Length: 101
Image (cartoon, rainbow, N blue to C red; front, side):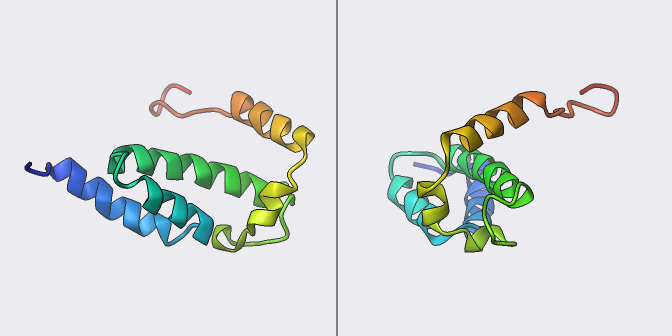
């Protein structure tokens, strides 16, 4: 089966992004490579990046870099913190183009 150019581009971006993530995210991606496309996994990593960035910004983790966030910080995440993250997502502006949000 031929691999499309887009597949190759997403595979490369996926590999780059995995290197920015904690090891447990890399393990998850490795586990899913046979059943998920690189495009799907890349979208997952974008979501992880938003979430981990929020954890850092809200000082829910003591880490300054996404790669350093320990699994224990997720295991100990309070329900209220998770709810606040979803509120944050609902309230943020998503830029569609230069004129619209």
